[in-house]
Length: 260
Image 1 (tube, rainbow, N blue to C red):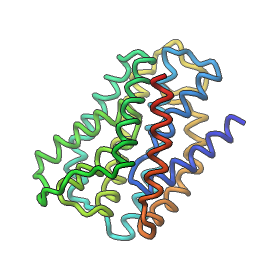
Image 2: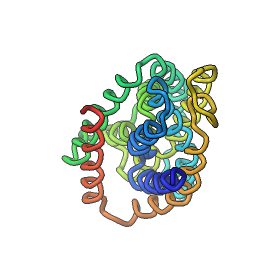
Image 3: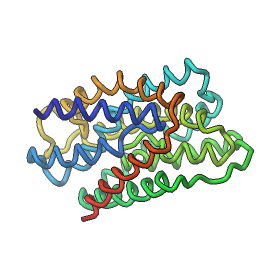
Image 4: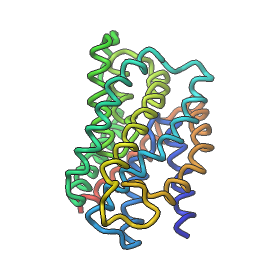
């Protein structure tokens, strides 16, 4: 039954990854926290494990989402390249930061973030485009900040990358596609870092690789890879307004439950 939950979770995360340019982490992390808690994992490590496992699954989700967006010519690869320079450094620092935060405190931080993202999505709050994409340094700094925050929250960074690129005048479909691409280096750097910082923790359950729980990784990855392509196709065909509001409502409930 536990593995079926991970399969369903992967399907949901995959659709969200392709449709909104997010890695699905804002759904994966809360569900994993509840699942790990129900299975008796230590409260001192279960939140970090949920975040680390989420980042590891996004490697698979992002790969398939990127392929679909690239096939449609929507990824801005120059922007991706220079943002990745900062993302790699920021993601590693974010994993170290998250490992130093107590589990219950980290849950509340994630809860606040989920609520803020839900409000932004529900109200359609987007910064007005400046009409000018920043240079290499600006992209690198932005990537560093996004990578750092994404590693703490266990997300692919879409909820941060899409608004940033939109603000800098990148058309929405290209912003979503490029955000999907940026999710891959965030996930790789973050997952490796969470494996490293959790490697010698004595409170990890069996079948863990650092702060990555392998059964959850396998189950989520199996379905997310397929459903990410479906989500990416929908992003190019459907008006996402209603879907975004439904997703926002779900995020708000998740964030509220973490705070309570």
